Amino acid sequence: MICLSRQPQTSRLLGEIGTIEWSRRTNGILGRGERARFVAAVVLKTARVMPRLLASRAGMRGSGPDPSRLTPPDTPFARDVAQACAHLDPMIVEHGYRSYIFARALGEVEGLECDPEALFAATMFHDYAFQTMDALTDCCFTLAGAEAAVQVLESSPLSESERHDVLDAITLHLNPTVPRAQGAVQHLAHEGILLDVLGVRGWQLDPGGIRRTFERHKRHGFTVRAEPLMRAHGRRVQGCRAGALFLAGFGPALRTGPWRGIDRAGSSAYSAGSKQRVA
Image (cartoon, rainbow, N blue to C red; front, top):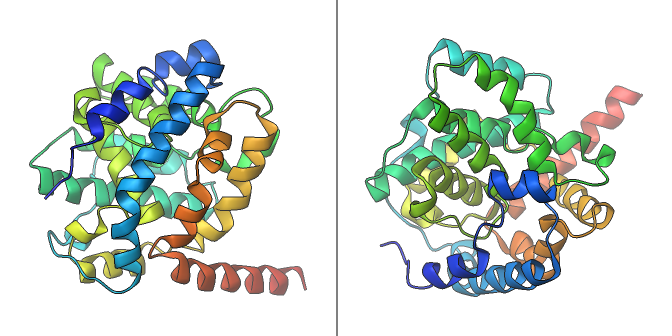
């Protein structure tokens, strides 16, 4: 069962924050009033999901569709997207693949469909600018990722509306909630990403299928390695949503998620491998 009781309240707080139009107009920088509303929305979302996250970490198992049977679209455009992201850190690339798979599975839970190529482009590009965040000083990394996607989208078979949805999904993904009313691609991309980061709604999918998805698309210590990068971006780009997320308690939620143990082990393995390569 999907709990939607507080989503309208959270959505009203957010308004147009995070949309591609808002991001391009503001560089992804929150105004004073927007910052207060964004933080309040994050606090509301965190309070709603934290009890279930704690239960998941304690071993409570869920049930639902098996995400491991799902695969990315096998089309020329999907291959173009994958090729455009191939130079990125595997941590980022595999996060994109897992987010797509989980988004599709949650779409089955909700009975909600969207264009699979548009969804794939959104999930693969949503963290495109992640590993170059240290070069950004005046704009949100989600906007940089959206602008990087524009060139690939120009040669795609997607309609103008679908291309907009991809860009919108990329910049919206940092919001605590993206309701269905903002678009199927936007909503499902957000939900798949949130599941892969925090474990939210993981209880609505087959746990064995989640485990097999992790085996196929390794986590590479994602949350452990990504947290300091996000924190640094939040400090460097004053007023961006990344900083507001940690102000509102995103850090404890990140460390409470059920994947934290897996990611600690993955981060340690990555560090050990890096030292061996340097030696």
